[in-house]
Image 1 (cartoon, rainbow, N blue to C red):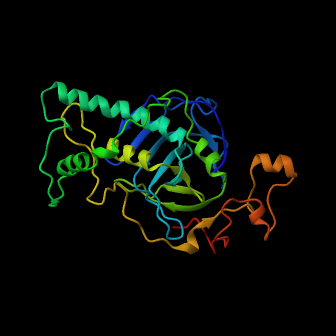
Image 2 (cartoon, one colour; image 1 turned 30 degrees about the vertical axis):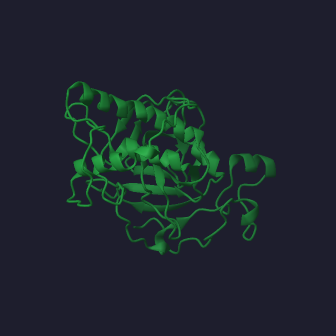
Image 3 (cartoon, rainbow, N blue to C red; image 1 turned 30 degrees about the horizontal axis):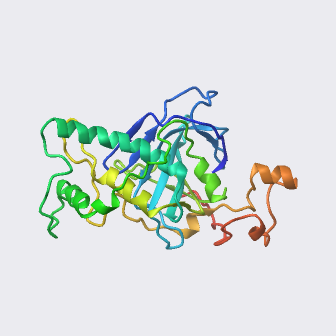
Length: 301
């Protein structure tokens, strides 16, 4: 991902789906930059708009066999029919992330709406006592109640000093990673109908989140109740995962974008060049590993 536009965008259109926490943005004219926008490499065109971003736990991608606790996927629509461009930020456990907590806090209000509606209706709510056993027959309702009752010590109010809602830009996570470089490949949607219309850009360096933030994100996603039916909505499995099963990759068809392809605009202005020379990657990249580019046609998956 290359050249995001920074700005303050709303966190108003939020949805807790069965497999993700989704932030949606309105469709606007091409010249309208009131929603998050970015210029994607490989000839996509200038500053395309983000349609929606989703948080999933754990991450659906790995990097060189390393797994991650969560990921954010932002979907960008190209009107010329090329499909969807997706930029992915991976998360590892580390320091508290204020930007992430702002989103978690906003999703907490959506979660609370479902909880309050079911409590007022006299229906079973999430605080009831349940008999937790080790049996798991694929019952999502059972898993949601089990997760709630066996993790209560983790569910503290993380938003005491947080800013809920308001201006928020998903591209700021890229600045946290300090990387503009990625692995790219053609793939499919992560949910039915799993159409092969997606070009992924997985940033090569993860952002950080705290253990408490991961626990809160799981609580919101795994124990959400539909306010109309009071049914639990999550499809997480017994391993506390909503991620799509890992798909086999063909490394020869994955493009590794490095500073030899481009450097950031700030670096270009400072250094007066567009890319780095082979052998100098450590001076330009926070994660100068796996630098061998793809062989052959890297986008033919």
